[in-house]
Length: 75
Image (cartoon, rainbow, N blue to C red; front, side):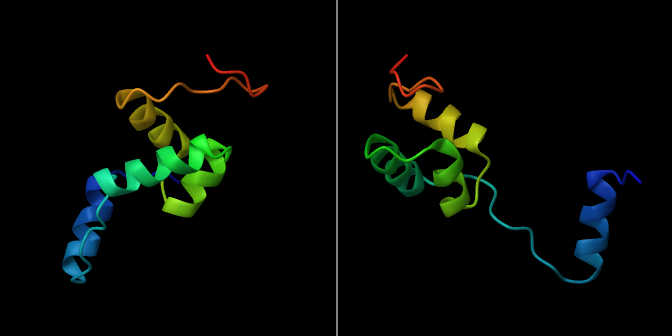
């Protein structure tokens, strides 16, 4: 069963549930960079911070962090 996101938003609004902040903060990006540079994976960092690993990857690239390939080599 598929439900459109606007339908979900309408139901949440009706019940007084505020949307969660879905933007990763600059503080979280800095923390993610430090964790990544210490050797943690994007998946682990994403789980710790509550974001998708691809979001972490995108933001790290934006701030100039060199990402590793799946074998641990810097790209």
